[in-house]
Every structure is written in C-alpha cells, then in structure tokens.
Image: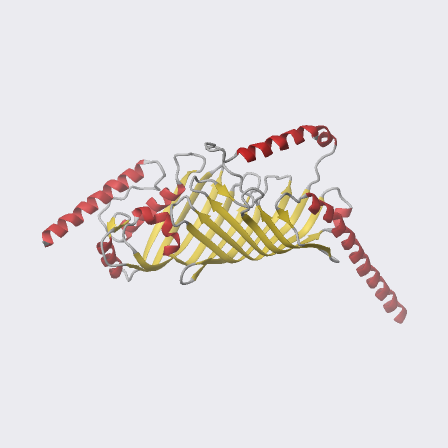
Amino acid sequence: MKKWFILVGILFVLSIGGYFVLSFYTVKFVQPHLQKAMRPGLTLAEVKLKTTYLSAKGIQYEDPDSQQRFIQIEEVRIYPSLLSLLKRSLQIREVTILQPSFFFYRSREGFYFGPWVTMEKEKDREGVFEEVKKKEKKEASEEVEKKKEETVREPISIEIDRIRIQRGTVDFEDKKVGEPPAQIRLRDLDFEIKNIRYPLAPLHSPFELKGNMKGKKQEGSIHTKGWVDLKTTDLEAFLKIRDIEVETFKPYYRKKVSAEIDSGTMDLESKITLKGKRIDAPGELDFVNLHIKEGGGTIFWIPAETLASLLEKKRNQVKAPFHVKGNLGDPRFNLQETFLTQIAFSLTEALGLPIKSLGGSIGGTGKGIEGLTEGIKSIEEMFKKKKEKKR
C-alpha cells in the first residue's frame, strides 16, 4: 500500500513539474509577440517571465507629436494557454491589467484623441492631419512590399478568453462644449470582457463595468453589463448610474440653462441597443434633492422661480423618462441635443406644465423638437401673463 502512495506522489510531482515547464515555455512563446506590438511612444519599464504568466510593468504611451499622455499602467499580466504550443494560434487564458489610467480628449473642433481613437479626417483646413497622412502613406507602401509575404503566410490568430481591468481610472476632457471644458473622471473601475478573437469575427463578447464617477462633493456609482460585437460595434447593455452630481454635466446643458442649479444628484437606468449605427435607448432619469438658486433665469426654458416652486411641491425630486432613437451615422442626428430635448419635454410633463404630449420619442431632427419649442413658448407667455396680473 505504501508503494502505491509513493508512486502516486511521484506522478503528482512530475505532473506539476511538467505543467510549470510547459507554462514557462508558453510564456516565453508570448514574449516575442509582445515585443512586436511595441510602437513609437510606447515604453515599458520592465518585462519579466514568471512561472505561469508574462509580466510587463511601468507601461506608458505618449503621442510622439503632441507629447500628450494617453495610457499609464502599473502592470499587465498575460496568462497564455498551454495549447499555444500545440497550435498555430496564440491562445491566452487571461489578460489582467492592474491600475491603468486612460486619458481621452476632444478638441474645440470636435476631434477625438485617445489611446485607440483615430482622428476624424473630414475637416483638414489647417494641416492638422498632415503627419497622419504621411504615416498612412508610409504604412500603405509597407503593405505593398509585404503583400507577397502575407499571401504566403497567414497572420497568426489570437484568442483571449478574458480581459480584466482592476482599479482603473478614465479622464475625459471635452473642449468642444466651450470653456471651461467638461471633465469626466471615472475612478475605481473594474472591467471584464470575455471571448475576444483576432482577426475580428462577428460574435458576442459579454462585458461588465463597475466604478465611480467623481464629483465636486461626492462620488456616484456607474454599472453597465451586456455584450458587444467588436467587429460590427453592435451592442446591447443595461446602464445604471446612482448619485451622480448634476453639476458634473453642466458644460453640456449650460447653453439651455441661464439660472443656477444649487445642488442635486441624478439616478439613471437605461437599456441601450446599438445595431448598424442605429441607437435605441429607452430609460428614466431621476433627479434627487434638486435645488435651484434664487434669482432670475430659466432652466430648459422654464422660469427658475416657477421651477423651484414646482420642485418644492414634489419634495425636490422628479422623474424624467426618455427614449432616444436615431442613426449615429446621420450628420443631422445630434445625440446630445436629442437627449436634452427629451429631458426638457419629460420635465415639463412631470411637473404638470400645460404642454401637449407629442407622442412617441423625439428624434434629433424631427417635428418633435419644433413642437416642444412651441409648447415651451406658450408656457413662457403664460408665466408672463401671470406676472402682469400680480402687478
């Protein structure tokens, strides 16, 4: 009986040892692919081969031209699958990204800059994209030179079972909305996406994101879960945010608000569907402890004094349902304007103001906005008549 125990023990040790040996060589197999992925502006402080994973520390990416920082990561751990040694494809069980920071920007002209964002090329007036075009020409010539080689040798396929981000941050500065720019700051982000394939194939990759949105006085929470098709960019997800300060989004609504919002938070729930660049997002926005500063001005065309009085009757809480639909590929469709119009319309209805329901959802270019504007004007005239009677 003892001999059997000794034999089982030896087999166990050999199997564990074999696993570590295979893991080591699998990790070593991944390292050259990581080195090929290096680009100008991308730096690594340290790359080490561990027993079961490849560790890359101190990762940072800065745009070589503008010197703007887009990525800073404490550590990336790549856990390759043992099957990578047996197949031509590179199979990875998991990629864990620890404490990454991502930075995105939008210029006054509306161009996006970020880690994976390509700049729009529609408005090339002042030679902003000269360098980009040079790079594209260079890459095109390189592709022609390698065409024969690519036809003979197929590109290696990559399969990743799961990518995880732990304790991440995202900073987005939006100058398009004017000065001061909007500052969206997400903190303590935990993100997970599964089933990733390259070259990209049409398939559903489930994902989940949890984190906080930083405000001046407090932090709110954000949670979204669903799936995305990385090839077509179609997605379906549920979005839920809680206790977000209304003032955080002031740069986006300030053109429609001449009065001051003293305080307040908002909760939001929505089911977002994106298919073929068409968005369909029904949901509800709940304003909590919304207080308006004393003084003149209007909020979404509603006199601040009247709005404050109506909010007080509802204990400074009001719900605004919305249903945004439209084609993101249509230049006439403005997502921001459509959403704000929806909220304005819902507020007037929720507060009991005499505006006729327009029916259905309001689009970015339809008669809904015109009807809403006419309805709001009639409300303004009504308030003016009431003030004249008081005098």
